[in-house]
Length: 184
Image (cartoon, rainbow, N blue to C red; front, side, top):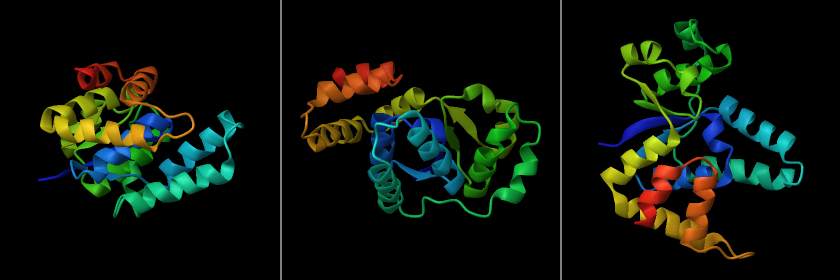
């Protein structure tokens, strides 16, 4: 049975990580979910921090992400935000509420301290760093992860990238475990 995950904005911000997470969901290993608010945060920050990136291309990326994953958008989660009023970061209650609404088992985030176990465990959820999450997927189906990274490398034309280049990008984006595992 495929389990449901919610991707936080900070894991959708880095391009190689975003690409790999979407491909993991496309492979059928997980059912990835996010909200309009999560996407707004991701792409607002990309546009603000990376003025060198074409805004229309970022808008296209956002649309392609939603098109790539059926039923990815969680809606009507806002009333559940009050359940997580004790969160260390009020700005992340919407992510937990969306995960609860989606009946997700995992929130994939780099900000683990914003998602304490005592708030998530009663609802059958946990927060995982993307490197740990991807290692879990690797242990479930290493072949799918290898295929995803190979397919990522094949999309780069100018300049072309090979698998090792993609793994280096993932490592540079804070994913040393999965990068090392996929090199073996």
